[in-house]
Length: 218
Ligand code: ADP
Ligand code: MG
Image 1 (cartoon, rainbow, N blue to C red):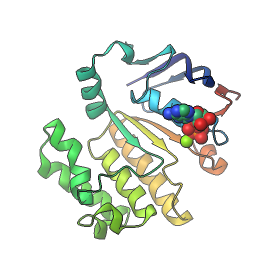
Image 2 (tube, protein in one colour):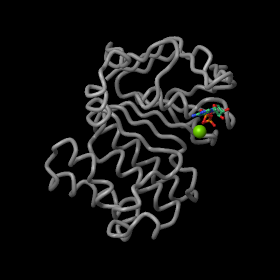
Image 3 (spheres, rainbow, N blue to C red):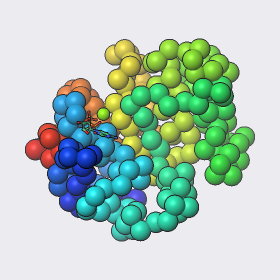
Image 4 (cartoon, rainbow, N blue to C red):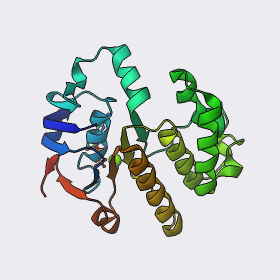
């Protein structure tokens, strides 16, 4: 997959959040996005993942403009091609963590046995095996974040979008999570985009952009 972004603009009411963002991310590349709080990082990630629409500009995934997809195509695209790690927990409170993680596989009609094997392996690496049978409210914020990561990578997405994926984690778990995200992205050959305010993390990525007031400043 290659990802190209041309001149994105986005406003909420009178607030201009994105003011002309362009990007070109090649096959299997990884990119860090840094910038202060409120600079537009999450908004950009949502637009890349087809969760929000831009007012102007375009997102081209393998030369297909995602704005031209109908609702069903967009839902398929998100289910099959995108892994999204949200900044804040999003797990459904009425299901245990394993059922939460399995939901996209069920919706996409995948073999649950195969996906489950992957999930158990990821849970072991991220040290959240003990959380799988628990409900989201029964585990800590850091554990929810790692469950969220397993949910995002369980179906081997070609585009892995992570919004401050280590925001709730201590330094040891931060390293484990970053290593796993890189390893999985490398194995799948997927594009990895990570929003972070940690400069040391950002410096370890192949490409890095800094956003300020909705524009790329470096
Ligand atoms: P960041 O992730 O860099 O902290 P965001 O993309 O979340 O920044 O937000 C950028 C700006 O857009 C902020 O001023 C925020 O208040 C505003 N914003 C984000 N989402 C919405 C929304 N759904 N409605 C109104 N304003 C929003
Ligand atoms: Mg944000």
